[in-house]
Length: 404
View (tube, helix red, strand yellow):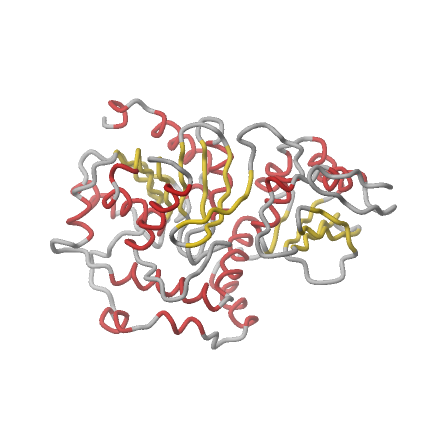
């Protein structure tokens, strides 16, 4: 069976490649696939049958034998692959429903689905990088409406907002970014990785994208960063949607003095073997080998197991822990100065940011809106339908409704 030439690329031929996979590779579009760090090996597996590798380099997609460890592994049964090849949006739906597994490098795996979907309309899902004052930042975006920038949590990546980008793209230009130090963005050694640093990086990204302002949606650490952007750069923020945002602790923190002395640069040294770290993560996180949780763990490990990624993770985590809650420059004092309309989404089963924080926010920001959901710390993944409906309503509402 011959593989058709690809748009902006090409694919080799093989008589054994199933027709659905040949169809996907044959319509590979390099314009929506960002592989800035050289060749990527993507393995396509038909469950319980066979597998093939696709090498992506220099705008080309080439079929190769599955000889080395792949960067990304996509697995589905034959029926699902046929459906993916027949419909431009079936790939993401199959992934969201669990019928298609994407492991190891989600950026590469999801970008491959986008690049082989056959979609060519304005606002189609695409992956690209942007040079900013904080280095090169990796983006995933779709849609053509008012701009919306999504900021992931500690240890996460832009792919944690995949369903959000897909859900909001019909109304917004939805952009998810790998923050500096995470995912496929640059990881400058020695950067502060505190709220101010990240807020400056977001402002620099808006400059690079020529966006005077945007809605900001942030989860966990991303929520804290969104608030900091709203406080430091009020004219750059339209509305804020905070999903289980990381907030300064109100109670005593054990070991605070020691944490202030800790040096995140120690993360440049990996004291434990890779296998040991992976085993600990999988023991600590229930279901770490299944579905979205497995994909999230893969993304965390992909950055954490690099020296600069570990240093960034430790530095960001340290600043969350030691942030001053009170005083003139304390977080809760400053929060009361926020001007942007804000929606806070809380998870009743969140063990990291308890829903009890809502009353502290209400005292500081009486005009803010609040929504409680029966989920944990990542509402956009755990309760996507309710979260995205709330985001759409809040971000689309006239100003007088948003302030109600």
